[in-house]
Length: 254
Ligand SMILES: Nc1ncnc2c1ncn2[C@@H]1O[C@H](COP(=O)(O)OP(=O)(O)OP(=O)(O)O)[C@@H](O)[C@H]1O
Image 1 (spheres, rainbow, N blue to C red):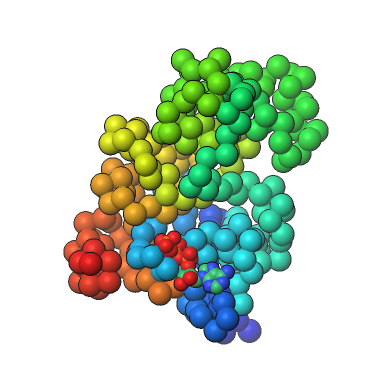
Image 2: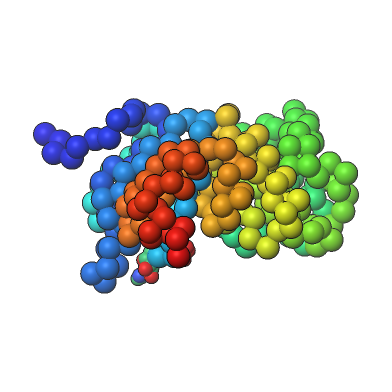
């Protein structure tokens, strides 16, 4: 019955894309894209401008509907769900530009994220049981901002604001975190710390990071997927993809 050739892997766990295509006015932004990210896996996605990285994220979060193909998370068909339902499933996305509230403290930003949708009754229970504070404190430690708890977000460095936003997503207890160019504009030290943060976050959640900075991608030490013209050009360790002649030709050798 199913004519689509499935890649190796389990479509009932993790993130599962098979034969996904998106066409904008006759232009194929995604072209038969297949990708599997296991539960708890950290995956870096790289590729030249226009390769389809953002469109891939948009398809996963339900912002863009694919014209064809399978998109599943934990076995659920994401193409049948709207953006809110996909977010409720535990898929969080961090855009490049942080959207933290500058006039609130680090603690208050995290508290606000806890109260945001994702089951109001569940959130209320947290607060009533007094577990909210513990949860916020755990997240502040994870993102390295414990010392800044009472400081306004507006006083944080660019890198710290990015971590705070990641922390706000963690408050939602995501099962999959999509992170778009997290280290653009960061210092080298902040970049290293961000790699360590994302490595720490993965393990209990899947994390997909789109990034152009190859030093950062190396520091992640994860499997790397190279997109080109809307499909996977190469996949493997950073060493594998860096030595792939096709990757050198279309991306690295520019
Ligand atoms: N809404 C749209 N309408 C028409 N074309 C679009 C639309 N969104 C994306 N595209 C085109 O689809 C292609 C893929 O874009 P996409 O933003 O996914 O690439 P990308 O890999 O994220 O690139 P970058 O590294 O520059 O962010 C591009 O050529 C882009 O111009």
